[in-house]
Length: 228
Length: 217
Image (tube, rainbow over all chains, first blue to last red; front, side, top):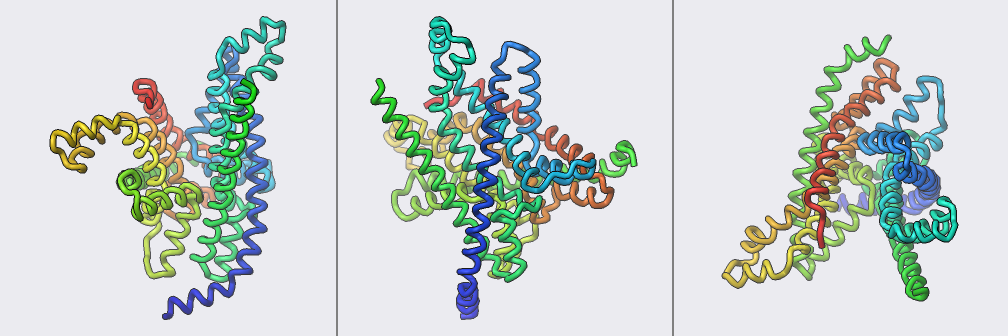
């Protein structure tokens, strides 16, 4: 009975919690989007470096990859936010978090891009070169459009992982979903209800992402079927 | 304070904390593998209620951040009378999270063993569980080795998240040391190097295994 009363009491907070948490979910989405684009661009550059003819580029990209893949994200975030501040480079929390997730994500996406570029038949690039295209042109107009289709499921997976990982930004004081949730908990002590709502919001967002990517894949498949 | 002095005063602490991180990871891997195997078998074997519960478990734990799960286990369970210390909560929370990932890998591995294998086992009179234990699982293990190794390495890195519920690991020690010596840059670089030394050999090993036993089917 006491437990029931306690729950009835928490429900009274529900509209307030939902309002605050849904607003802070926007910050989570914006942070995810910013970090995603940074990882996308930098990851692409790294993939090209790994496929480069020059050994120096390949070596730099490999070292970058190993460093970022074998050190926890949280350590990287703390280094960027607390570490750099100490040596005189103060980044705003949001910038530090975007940078951290972006630099880390680039290492993961470079593998995705590399394998999807390698996955395209060599003949495609060679045919484009034989037509007199330059290599950048062949890459941009012939190879990449095909490899992006291969990369799509992995990109979506990365996006969903990133969305969940942004919860770590609460530890460097970015006012996103998890950060606001902690504040609400210390304000009202409704621990279970608040974190369950937070879990539900993350679940909803990641379901939406996976549905969107499945629909895009389906759409691309159809277009491809129509072309062939 | 020079780096040499800092290192001299913190390396014992850090080594101890690295050991704690390893123990935490091993505990969580044990929970994750055991629960993951159970979930995979239930998901494959049951079309009814139990199968649906396993599927929902996997969806929910993979769709929400490990941090939220840890907070629920550590701060949430206390309010309904279940108390864990931060280390137990971390092992349980990270283990339950990893179980969802292990379950999907195990399911794929078990389903990749050709049907004829279990049918042959049934035809020589084995029961379902004997066929699973002696025929299917030994073959599935080879398939799941590399992907589960990768999940285990990810888990080893994710133990750093447990510092946010004050579980005694490398990251928590790093935070303590930073507030003690005010040299966060040096300390986080050092701690990053510790994680690197733990993870890099393992990821090389996994890549080696992946090349030797490429995933099929």
